[in-house]
Image 1: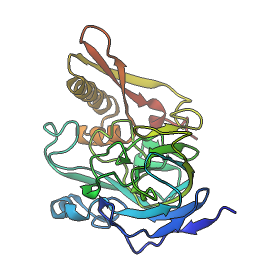
Image 2 (image 1 turned 90 degrees about the horizontal axis):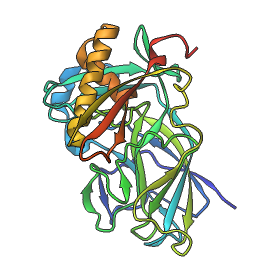
Image 3 (image 1 turned 120 degrees about the horizontal axis):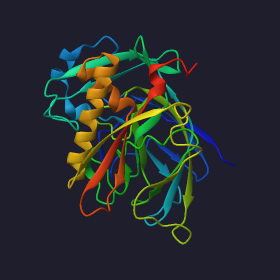
Image 4 (image 1 turned 180 degrees about the vertical axis):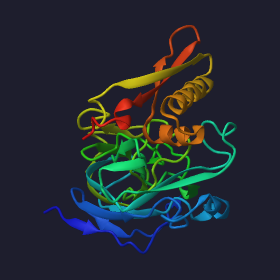
Length: 316
């Protein structure tokens, strides 16, 4: 009979390593309940100000809960991770971190904002802007084949810091097993994020997660990199209203993405009378970057899509 297990909360790890001692051993079909720390590992708190960024110790960023050893998982198999439930805790933060983000040169200075998430429904960005809370884990992965102190960021074909905002409740994530037992870990909880996570941080927060694990043997399903199946529409909480889009066009996808984002920041700042740096943070929480076209003689189109429902009362 399948069982539900609660993961210990007193142990985290900051790298992928095949020698990390499992915090839990489970069978295929079992569920594990995690309580993850926010990505700074408590170096920030609800009362933190921008000055805290200069004191951030990157050796203690990306605390992961795990690893979880899944009996019967062998290299070549696929680990199915069904996301049964996710709940944000009471607060979170987003920030510009110097040298990082899609527009690092435009916004070189540190900037930190914290938010009360206690109503469980919205991030109250300002009096007139409410971003729906739609939680997901920014990092979910198995230990990579050569994991021996591998950094959590960037991600790889084993999963990891994927930051795929569609990995919400009801989604099933498939990961290619690369070590015996899979050695699954997770963390980096997000209350909301736009596709692209453009300022390098989503709404980072501590989180509760309930995940069900199933081993699919290689003869039935073997994959080269993570895959997933979502439940319902991709933007369910904002699809009831209009979107505003900006574009970037050119021979380089990164440059096109930057141009689309700059135009969006200008639009939000001018239309809704907020500072450009706040418009940059807002874009990281709810603007979706889309590759609209890649086939037209090297002139690529990237679109940035803003859900207009966050600015009005249609969410009520």
